[in-house]
Image 1: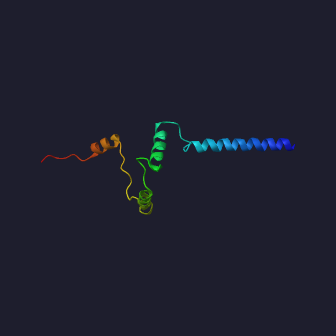
Image 2: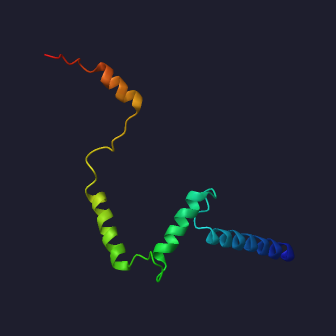
Length: 101
C-alpha cells in the first residue's frame, strides 16, 4: 500500500514539474503559434534585454507607466470612432437635399 502511494505521489510530482516547465518555456501558452505571437515575444525580449538596441531604460518605463495610469484616472470621454460604409451611405441618402440657389 505504501509503495502504491509513493509511486502515485512521484507520478503526480513528475507531471506537475513537466507542466510547470512547459509553461515556463512558453510565456503565452494559451495563444496559437502564429506570426503575431512570435512578433510580440520578440518585441518584449528586445525592449527588456539590457544592451540590446531597442532596450527601454527603467526611467522611461516608469514615465510610460505614469502616462498610462492617467487614462485609468481620467478615461477618454468619447467612444472610439467606428463606422461602416453601409452606415455612411445610409446617412448620405437620408440627409436633406441641398438646394442650389
